[in-house]
Amino acid sequence: MAVLNEKPLLILGGGLMGLAIAHELAQRGKRVEVLSRSRLEAAGFVAAGMLAPHAEGLEGDLLNLGQISLQRHSAWIKNIESNSNMSCGLKTSGIVVPFDSQTDCESYPTYKYGEKLNTNELRKEVPGLSLKWKLGLLFKQDGQIDNRRLLMRALEKACVELGVHFQEGVEVVEIIQDLNKFTGVKIKDINGNITHLESKEAVLCCGAWSKQIFKELPIFPVKGQMLSIQGPKQILKRIVFGPGIYLVPREDGLIIVGATSEIEAGFQGGLTPKGQSELQKGIESLIPELNQLPHMERWWGFRPCTPDEGPLLGMSSINGLWLATGHYRNGVLLAAITAELIGKSICSIPITNEESSLLFKFRWNRF
Image (cartoon, rainbow, N blue to C red):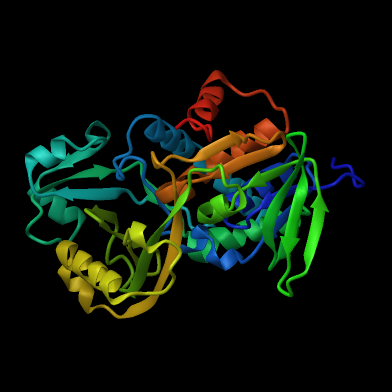
């Protein structure tokens, strides 16, 4: 049980990672307070929700981290659904990656984890696929979560049910430390008032904005634009993951189309003709007939990227300040393992050698 007179552990950032860790810690009896400037700007509301360590072609330590998290997802989601009494839209739909040559297919980093599809099998799995694609890989183990409409809302409710406190509309402007120990943060509210919040521990989960709060972190934003189109139910039974474009079909026929990768954009918001045109051309390159479907929504967001595209996990250079940020394209996939690793570490729960190795490999100062 949490001690009522102790200062709460602070979660800096109310996006997917912040909510996942708040949920994990609250279940373990921690008193938790989430500080968020605007949860709607979080990457968790923007992403397509793919669970795709194999279809994305991840390699090395990042592939291993993704595979472990994928194995954890079913139990993690069931727990959230139990605490929130809401569905998260988890679906092991499988993902098809098409290729135009045998060489490209067999040289794909995760080739050995997929089921090879010849031309006929590929067209059966993805009706209407452009004739330029000759063969493919089917990763049946990969899937999706409806993060934008379901998971984020369910996590919020689960946190509230467990007693997590939220401060929305506040910006963390400074981390306070004393002799290299974390002692709290300065926050600014929407009226510009500055307040000092005391705490012994915090988790930095501010995604692409993390470096603005903690200058040491090697994180930069990569803007992505997306759109959705509405088709009939079951128009696509598999996610289709092509070069620079993916199509993620939801149960109700909505198809998420993404995503541009605009490193040069910095934090410049808004939709652009170039970005939207890129998405339209991407649809044309995969399943041309989908361009005839009505557009439902267009949006953009900022992925938190690091030099090796892997997350920053574990203790920072300040004792008491933990890190769970920099997940780039794989935040939804890695949320389960991130919450578990950070939760165990903070609560001093013994971890396995494998988990210890993961924390070491994704330490913030590995570069």
